[in-house]
Length: 160
Image (cartoon, rainbow, N blue to C red):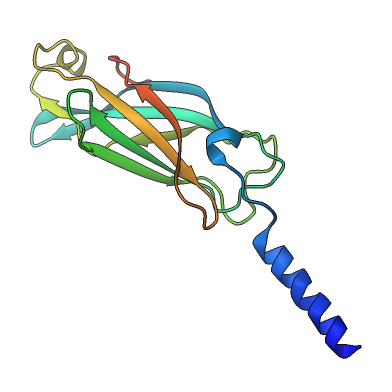
């Protein structure tokens, strides 16, 4: 009898630890209210700096809370395959993003961008300016990263 109770207790603990079936974030997690643009990163070595930026909210379309939810944004120039910059954000702690819940607005800025002596708005009009795109990846708990979106960065200054 003790062995049976111990076995049931172990099964119960393992079931709770696993938290249910794995959620496919590429299908269950959506980006809402997405805006992109170029963030004013201040003055660097006497020059104006702008960096690509994305702002969005996440909606959990699954029936499970997504604990330890994290988002990674990879910025690339449209003419180059290599990563140009990135940004990482922890969205939730262990309590997670509840089913059908929508997160607060999340902004991720690249560390790399353009610098120049001209006004920031004029930098966007420069003949040497190369547009950027951003790929957004997410993961929760110990799952693997999943791509959940890709966007062209608008050639406009991002709202503050």
